[in-house]
Length: 269
Image (tube, rainbow, N blue to C red; front, side):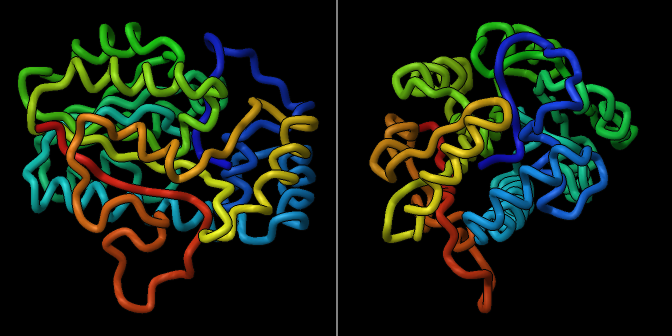
């Protein structure tokens, strides 16, 4: 599934229905969840035990990608769409540890995430950490609001980790990526993870688990093939090692096993 969440406008907090941001928080050992989230999380984990590994692998991928971009590529601006609930080592903490002047804009529209915005907003004095309430389905609003903090004439790393799986229409998801990346200058990056049902990554179990999720939790979610996920990078240049299981992307020796969640980083030429 995914750390992040999407659909329409700032929803009201509903503690009677499991919500992805909170269930994801439960899977990675956080405390910002309710009994219903734990119940659904346990049921999904019973159907698809690797889900906890996916959650951890996705989080570790974020850390490696931000460090790589800040250290090796000199990126000083990050647009993190689909923030999810804050945990240790959020994007701004990793980036500003390397470059105190880094500027980060978080985007989410989940009420419980918004309630934690204060935690996210504690960055360095030299840099900027901002938070905007917006929906991935409305990229124009995201770009308009983010432009108040980020300079779109200089490279930006667009982070879309586990967010496009909430955009159920594949063409709409591709259009969102195209629109966001079109607003970025050459030298910008797309950092993306997405669940897959591909057998070679062990993804077949995602299908019944996601069916249960869609019947018992919110927002609805979908997995995609590696081919469909690769299409998000059309017009961009994938960096080594390309589109791989997110647990394997620039991983250290002895890294976790392959998980059915693709991850990649690409640069806009």
